[in-house]
Length: 337
Image (cartoon, rainbow, N blue to C red):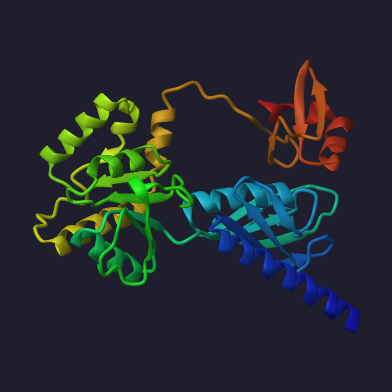
């Protein structure tokens, strides 16, 4: 018995170490934990796995139908930031759908049932501030107060108060060595000290949000300078200027509040519905097919099990579903429509 305990402890320690490693790197991932099972299943309560943002799975939550379902729901979890309980059962649930619960009906070999809790682990929002103006200082302190990660870059510093934000002196506001992704919020608040250099560095980065603390007139002049310098219009059009929500802010402190409020608003808005509406006008190319036996959506490109019926490919999540279909294909043909 002591061997089993020690083995489970090692697995749990490995899971914690892996999670800590990803958190330290600032990577997004989802944690999946088996919370209940009904035998026979290969996954047991306490089994855990990590799903990376690219769909790779590390750990164990069971095989067969469980893994593709968990990966699919984990990626959704990372997209919307909400946890969910996934129920995989051999029959359709009698009860009405519950909020936060996703039901899957499976007919794989095991015949068991699994409840798997999936939750996202997302890095702290990262704000990169270029400049050392009073607005920059207040924005850095406020952002740290609400738990954001903050980096401040300027060509020189002379006693400014950025709280406990990370501060670094950089020539021409170079972003080298600073992790900037589509989830980074980049704010230029140079107040006349290197506006053009800072804004060019910001617009050439991968930041999903680029804002310039300046009047509309000043922003227009700097943008025109960058345009004549050869910065592409698609880059220039990313800029938000003046930065922040229009709350009639006047003082540096109020402007900093308006910028932070805009960032908070954008984080909560979730732009996916708008993106989906835009995509709806384009031809839809499906990369998934429904398993006619269990109803699971299967990635056609990666499907391991498939058959052919009336000159059409049929895809399955597992060998059991394929075997059932192959015995009586006509019986399940209607489900292919």
